[in-house]
Amino acid sequence: MPTRQRPYIVEILTALALIAAPFVLPHLGFAPTTINRILIWGLVGIGFDLLFGFTGLLSFGQAAFFGTGGMFAAYLLTQTPFSNTIAAAFVGMIVAGIIGYLIGLLALRRTGIYFAMITVAIAEVFFFVEFNPLSAYTGGENGLPGVPPPNLNLGFTTLTFDSNWEMYGFFAFWYFVGLVIALRIVRSPVGLLLRAIRDNPLRAQALGHNIHSYKLTVFIVAAMYSGFAGSLLAMLQGFMPPDAFMFATSGEIVMQTAIGGAGWLFGPLLGATVWLFLADFFQTTLNLGATWKLVLGIVFVLLVVFLRHGLVGAIVDVYHLVRPRKSATAPTVDAGPRPSLAAARTSPPASELRRKRTTGSTGPILEVTGLTKRYGGLVANSDIDFRVDHGEIRGIIGPNGAGKSTFFKMLTCEVIPTAGKIVFDGRDITTLGVADACQLGLTKSYQINQLFDRLTVRQNLAIAALGEIRGKFKLDLLKGVSKVAGLDAQIESTAALVHLGERLETPVSDLAYGEKRRLEIGLALATSPSLLLLDEPLAGMSPQERVETVALLKSIAHGRTMIVIDHDIDSLFELVERITVLQEGRVLVEGTPEEIRTNAEVQEAYLGGIHDEAGAA
Image (cartoon, rainbow, N blue to C red; front, side, top):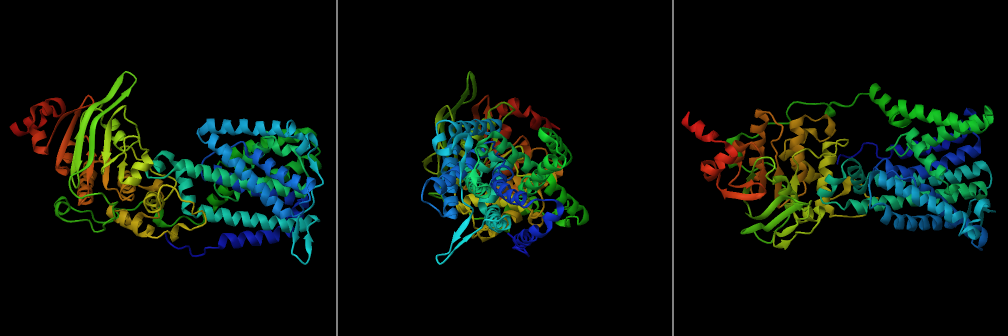
C-alpha cells in the first residue's frame, strides 16, 4: 500500500477541533451540558458506525449495551465501596463486550432485516429486565442516583472533574482515544475486510475469510464503545437513567448516524451535534413542548432525503467539486501491451505469483467420484466421476441447464453434494466450507463479476491476498494494512499479470467491463491458488476482448492447474488440453479438443454440426 503523506492529519485536526470547541460552540448557542452529551453520543456512534457504516450491519439494539455498561458502572460507584470512576467505566465496557459476544452469537446467525429485528427484540428484553426482575439493582423507573463525577487518582492526589468544562476535558480525551482506536481499526486488515463484508459478504467468504468471526468481532467492539459511553453518561448526569435502555435510544443512535453520514466515523458526532442542538432549540427557545419531536422528525426526513450520504458525505462531495479527483481514477486507455497468442503459448508471465504448496507435482490434484446434487425432485448433477492432474488445463462444456455451474459450486464447496466425494490434493473436502477450500488452494472466478465496487483495484486485490497471507481469521486490529509483509508484492504481481498495474488506485466502479473481468480473474489469482476454476471468463466480451483475454489466460496458465467453463467453444478448444462434456447433469464424454471436435455425438448435441459445415465449405 502506498504510504500516506500525512498519516496523522486526521488525528491532529480532531485534537485541534476538540480544543477549539469550548471557545466556539457557546457563541453558537450550545450549552456546556449539551456539548458534553454530544461527545458521549459521538462515542457511542463511533462503535455503531464501525458496525453499520463499515460492515453493513444495522443494529437497533445498541441501547442494551449502552444501558448495561452504564448501569453496571453506576452500581459499582453507588452500591459498593468502589470509587475509581475510570476503572468502573472500563468494567462497564468489558461487561457490555461480554453481553455483545453472547448476543452476537445469536443475532449474527441471520442477516439483513432479520438481524435488525433480532437486535430490536433483544433491546426490548433488556429494557423489560431492567425495569422488572433487576429493579432492585438498577433502581427501576428511578434509575441509580448518586453517581460521582469523573475522577482521576494520581496516587498523591485525586483530580475531580465536577464542573461542566472540566468534564468536557475528560470526555473530550476519551472521545479522542476512542476515535484514534477506531481509525486504527479502519486502517487495519480487519477494517478492509469489514468493508469487503459490507459490499459483498459472499465473495469475501469465497476469498478465504471467516466473515462470521469478523462480524462478531465488530459487534463486540461496537458494544464496548456503547458500554463505555453509557458509563460516561452516568457520571455526567449524576445518576444512571432508565431511559438508556429504551428503544428510542437505539433509534436516536441510528438517526444521528444517518444525519451525519455513515462510514466516516465523524458522522455520528456531527449528527449528534445537529440532533441535540435542534432538540434544545425547539424545546427551550421555541417552546414547542411535545411537538418538538414531530418537528425534529420532519427535519430528519428532509436531511436524509436531500443529503443521502449525510452531512459529512455532502462536505466530501463539495470538496471533490472544488478539487476533482486525480486522473488515476478516471478511465484510461489500455494499461499496457497485452501478449499475443503466439507469445502466450511459449512465454511465462512477466510476474510470477507464489502458489500454495501441494503434496505432489504429478498425479491427480482433484478427484471426484459419484458426485450428485438434488434439489427436491430435480437432479442437477448425477453420479459424476471427474479427475484433474497437476498442471492440466481442463475445459468443461455443455448447453444451458447441463449442470456446469452447480458442478463448479460443489467443487469449490459453495454447495454441499447430496452424494459423492471430492478429494483435493489428497484431502476429502466434500463437506468443507468455501473459505476452507480457498485456504487449501482451490479458488474460483465467477461468471458474473463479484467485485467490491466501492473500493479501489488495490483494495480488491488486497482483500484476496490477505486471505492467503493472514489465514482465515486474525485479529490484527491495530496494524496498518501497509505493514502486512508480502502484501504489496502480491498485489502488484497480480495486477501486472492481469494488466491492471496502472489502475491500482482506480475505484472499481470506474473500470471498463473488460477491466472488471480481468480483475475478477485477478481476485482468484491473488489467493495463490494451486487449482484455479474459471467460470465463463469470456462472458459478455467483444470479439477483440475475447482474443486478448484468451492470450491473457494462456499466460496465466503457464505452470498452473486450471478448470475452465465457457460457451465460446473455439476459444476454449484453443486454451485447454482436455475437455469434459456435460449433458443433463452427467458426463457425456471426455477427450482432447480434437477428439471432442470430431465426435459425432458431441457435434450433434452441442456444436450442431457447425464444424462439419465449416469443413465442407
